[in-house]
Image 1 (cartoon, rainbow, N blue to C red):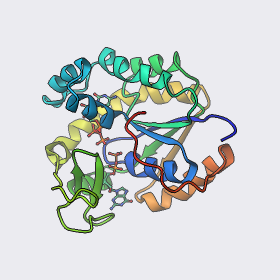
Image 2: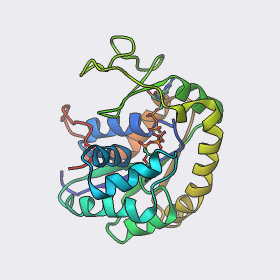
Image 3: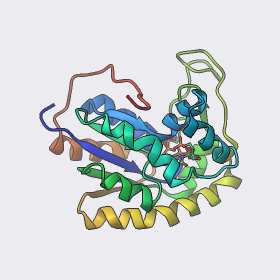
Length: 227
Ligand SMILES: Nc1ccn([C@@H]2O[C@H](COP(=O)(O)OP(=O)(O)OP(=O)(O)O)[C@@H](O)[C@H]2O)c(=O)n1
Ligand SMILES: Nc1nc2c(ncn2[C@@H]2O[C@H](COP(=O)(O)OP(=O)(O)O)[C@@H](O)[C@H]2O)c(=O)[nH]1
């Protein structure tokens, strides 16, 4: 790839960040960095930051900024030769400022999806916890019901994804995302996409990115939490 490319994807829970990030990674050969997957990996590996992060996630809280930045920024610094797309970070203005001081972002994608759509999708979202692979019983069902396509292990449904929890999560997203979105707007790198279907939003994202990065024939890009 000629020029390195750094992008962030933002959106409320269920807006399709993970799904669209996978498509972008496949089509353009960027590394998909999922902060949530990275946190889960650190928890599984019992790192100091992972142990700390777990105490917050278990209570349904966001991991504090200093822990998230301690987890992520050193890894990003190792990615100086890679193009990447970050999903799930920054979640707060403090995280956005910390990211700013580490690298220059080329582009920010913000997904704007109606509440009813988010509610429907999340009530149908099933996750393979070990890998972070995500399914939806209507949109992208697993080959065998209730089982991960690759490992065959059981899929789970997060309590967080139940409609009762969604209103609070959405409110939190809106409050926290607003100043981040304003920051990226003022930098002239924010692109917002609205709609109810990923398949209808995707062509617009695809054509925007095609003007910014060369496509790749690479088809074996993996979901990579971090390098
Ligand atoms: N910048 C971040 C990223 C992740 N997390 C923590 O890690 C968890 C898992 O993150 P993610 O996989 O992004 O999942 P969700 O919050 O469930 O987000 P979404 O529904 O949008 O995929 C979050 O709930 C949160 O506790 C965090 O605190 N700060
Ligand atoms: N019905 C439907 N489900 C979708 C669509 N796009 C994504 N999904 C599913 O909706 C859920 C949320 O998507 P995900 O990519 O995990 O969103 P994230 O929380 O923003 O990362 C997952 O179960 C996806 O498989 C869509 O256009 N229609």
